Image (cartoon, rainbow, N blue to C red; front, side, top):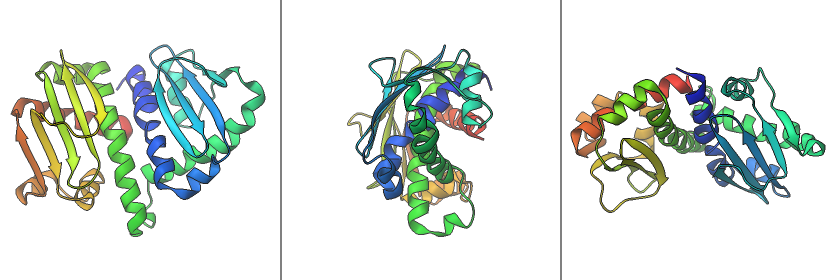
Length: 249
């Protein structure tokens, strides 16, 4: 596991889930009901912006107009911020630091509660539902980052041919892993022309697999997970999922 890839996973995988968080959790949305900020996270390997406006969050890749710019001289500093042992260098918006240390930190704490749940919290049906949707978002986006950056991930991507891999829940969230020239891009939605499919019968099954409560092979045997299409893409995607687990652990 390398710091450059982990910084990509954190900024493009974990922070991507903030978009969903404020859609699904009323408390999170209320925190930013009156906000109008664009926070840029600038690092050597990946730069993103989070547009936080009136109860919504939009994740943008790359630099652009912002009200706050937080710099990280190395990928390792990005990762230290995520594990709570480091801070960014504010190069713009120093007067808005209270929003960062207050509202935004509260927001990310709520996200952490969902992504690293306690057994007690998982007893609540709605909490489990949100946990599953957010975790899927992180996993789907992180898989592409690892395929494009991590050495082992790149090896898996080399074994994949061009096409769309559909990852979806029946009547639920769906993501496309688009493979082009051994590079992966994650897109939310459904493709009409998938070359491979991994379809879960329900959110409960998906959540159980993601949390390690249900064995994937068992779910495939019971047809709660249906896989079809170009087998090498599916095999290599499974290898990527194993790497995602390592990066998010």
